[in-house]
Length: 353
Image (cartoon, rainbow, N blue to C red):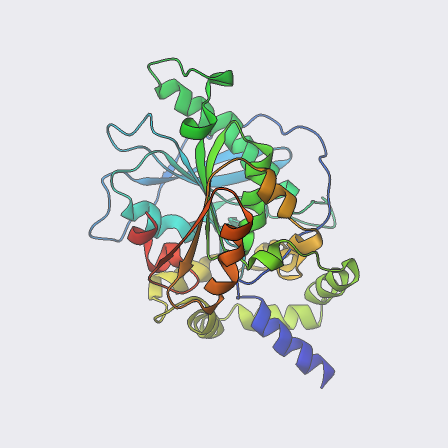
């Protein structure tokens, strides 16, 4: 009976990607290596009849010992000089940067857009898996560092190359008008928050779609609880059984309809999750759903980062009221509501744009 209770607990936890979760305590372990852009880029098929003429490409780069991937959509004509957009995907069963494809495809008059696969994600795209028994990671720091490598070695150099006039501020960047816009989905809000705090010269604005409640982002979870969660999720018996069940198309559909979508999820969503629902992609899901992002409070990061912030909630999301303190506690923060529930960039991509 005990293991059934734990299994039910996991079933309600794994796919709830908008719930409040946290990360391992970590510290900086040195500088990231230079990025190497792949010589060839894979163009992804866009099924939408209203797709932009600009194609979404799958590209690669190196960060430390990891071969990572990202989706890229070049700027529409006349938008090359506009600030780039960095999209941080949620972590969960079958999820990776594909989560942003519908939004990227819907944005027709777009600036440069980059959607990186976080370390350990994007297995279907050809990114390296993460083996925690071989390489230790620090959460959310390691994910933040992977994105910083992309920004510093690919995004900013490409953007500067498109400029015909010298930018007037330090390092060629104007923090308030010329930095990148970062958009983070759901429980990955701490990654976006930490990224903004560490990079005030290259990130100008932060947008959080369906983030956890303010109290959850600013309250640490006890280390003992995080350890228990992580050990259960990595259990070769109970954890493995639970993941085998959760990776089935039927349960993905059930939990997506129950927790994520205001209307029913579509076949494209299920097809994409099928591709990424492999054993090698489980380790980042285990870390995230154990609550490792909540090893500490991110209140100081939120209050000390200078970027204007926008909090976006779905009309069907009852937790919207719990996000009011973002506006009350932060100097430059706005709240807005759009149609949808918890996966707004997929449900309502044009409204997010």
